[in-house]
Image 1 (cartoon, rainbow, N blue to C red):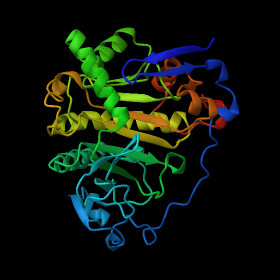
Image 2 (cartoon, rainbow, N blue to C red; image 1 turned 90 degrees about the vertical axis):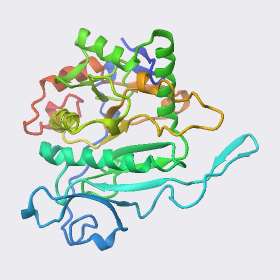
Image 3 (cartoon, rainbow, N blue to C red; image 1 turned 135 degrees about the horizontal axis):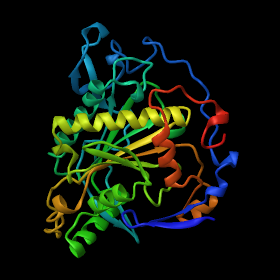
Length: 358
């Protein structure tokens, strides 16, 4: 029987409907195979740096034999959602509000090669990507105009990618995104009532129960949340409390790289290399806000940074749009079991063996 589940962190409802699991229309047809771009036609490839905007940041190549001077390279998006120039102007427009489109929009090219995905990266290569994320957050936080830096990855055209070369992006905004703001609000309310971090409580509960833990290491857990909005939605959280991704040390980044690599390879094997979105939720820029002197007084105790990964294998339709609920045909307990059993080094399964029944 279907079940409505509520998430106290995101304040959202999800309908877990496992009897819909084998309906083909509930899942997207896998993306057609596309030829990997040749380096000559790839705007992100080494040697084509003049096809992008000016370099903002880079990390040197791990292997000189690659022919690239850089391992990770960052530059401003040619078609930015927000621009760095100008002042932040906040005004009312009747009953509505407007904030000038000041911010930053950057592309983080994750490797020199044109035909690799993040699931292919070595741990050392993935650590370099995470180091670049950390460095860019640290730098952009110096800008008093910006209140949040959101790092995200769109893998595959169904997930929003327009360039095949492995890359992530960041958008820094003059307001805190509503999804993150809700998590911060929930975290603070929980801490004020119980003097505990809600994410730490979640980790302890899920480890004790065991039924929604996909992967567990000494430093991190990957779990499928109780009220998962979408099939195989997975959160990666550090077991040790920490509110700020930018404060993680290199050892923690390596631990994160290990579990993220493991998860990506299991997802690739289990779901036939699906398109996916990956987002980082960390604490906001700690600048004082006019009229809100106590906004961040408990943030180091109540918030908990984490990654969220969502394979794009289902559609949202009219009911979801009209109600704000989601219908998830794969129970998180089932998703966790499939991920536990998946071979991270295994071959991609045939469609007949896929757990989503396509």
